[in-house]
Length: 359
Image 1: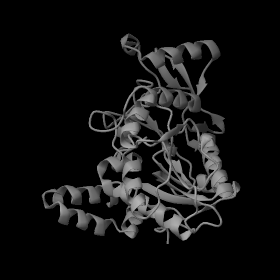
Image 2 (image 1 turned 90 degrees about the vertical axis):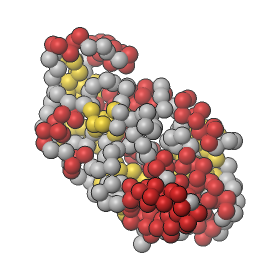
Image 3 (image 1 turned 135 degrees about the vertical axis):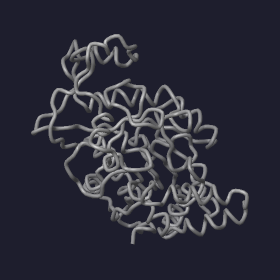
């Protein structure tokens, strides 16, 4: 559900990119390697029913992956912005609380998070929201039993849901940080959907060429969220890596141990993500009756919300952590780190104001 600091498709050489995507066919020596439990199941499914779509492959891999581990931190496969610094969650909370205040402080508003990781972002955001007079019930959309345990420690009293459709019919203040990138994508080559088969002893794609990616799962999730917001009021902050405008190209990638890996290797044992098409999300939001803000880079958005002032305040209170705080600020905002690759978009009810930071 995360990506390395730089955009891999800009920073990798052609040779590295091919290696990161993995071989299209596997030689006989790989037949002797130890198969993951999910790969054995996928092979049986393919032998029984024929090649499966990439969408089905990605959905199966990520469902297994997140259900069986905590993928975050040094011992995991990636690190997200809330784990880098408390400043990230604090500014998210301040933004949501400010929007709620300008909307007239509606009662019964709830805080909801999609894919809340360890609950770190929620804990930081809620602390700031309480300072602004908003103490909402907490509803988390999470299916992983492993991550739910961590979230229960970070956010006591949280209520869990398996899907967006299960959220209460109430004004929503929502954050979706690195949620949409892990939802499955479809890939088409010359108008034909790409599939995964078993060939030469390993998993392989059935066709190569210029790729066009689509994600019905993302559009469905965005529509469900936006429909609820349009009906009940509220605002959502969508923060993810991706592109502001729809464009052809293959962006699927795998991360294992904080390094790029072949996407068909170790099914269920590594993180699979693809760039988020923010233009497609905005179209889904508007079709459901909500409004969508312009898309801005994460670095610009955080700077507009005052991360520099917050970093200076933390450094004054903790002079022994000055270098650490400055490094976190750079990592979140620098264009060469997460600042440009990650984007932010707001979805809000027509009667609610647009959140700050999207001027």
